[in-house]
Image 1 (tube, rainbow, N blue to C red):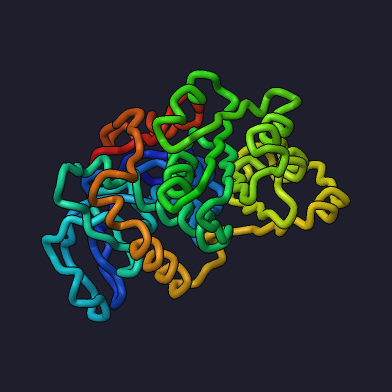
Image 2: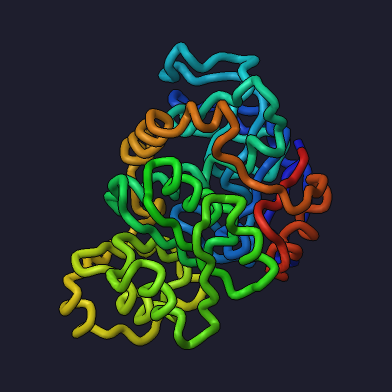
Length: 324
């Protein structure tokens, strides 16, 4: 099969053996694969959790038909099903996923490319907003880095689950103008020094009860300043830096719960539970099209290096997809 493989010369599309499913695996004929920021690190030769290094097939989410299943896979997943999944090695003609990461593709009006945009965003943001963030109906929520695919999904989930006010940040004016199409009530430009004051003004001086932060270092103290007393900040990503200033006194003064999350240190059982509760809360909204993501551009699998370069250039809005 063809796959996009990490080599000493960068990512190259090569012929590699087709993977074989283990007892809990689902083998999927991949039709489309979504790109994610973590793929850039893997493509550069770095490790991401348990994967990385020369010979690694890039890719974390994909959609296609089930070809075969392991002996421990529940009977609800069978060959021929149209599914979407998260798992390793997604930039390929065939890929494996643990059965707990697999979900059916709704039959109505959803193609492969759209299905491939959803697994990581749904799992990450339902966990960040609802489970780790503990969002309750009637709260104000802010998503830092809202114009990414995951950020756009976070705003939609917050709105769908009853947030009274959803704020989203982006440093790009064109992208900020599009955020309202994906659940955003107030778009914030974090390049302006007074952006925390704008958040406070939008919330009547109280601040937001929940911040889901994909940026971190550059906005950490601003987050503390505009988070409500007894609010929560969930650290999902570090696109703006891994290390920076942190006002410990302000953190204590506002009695903020600061929560770190990642899939890299979670067990198989934990991830299965994340997917299960996400589907319980959101699947009807996936099926009726309430939750969706824009596709910026599609590339054929043979152009996986070009697709990664397009993501690295950071000029896209929404998701980039490989058609396999």
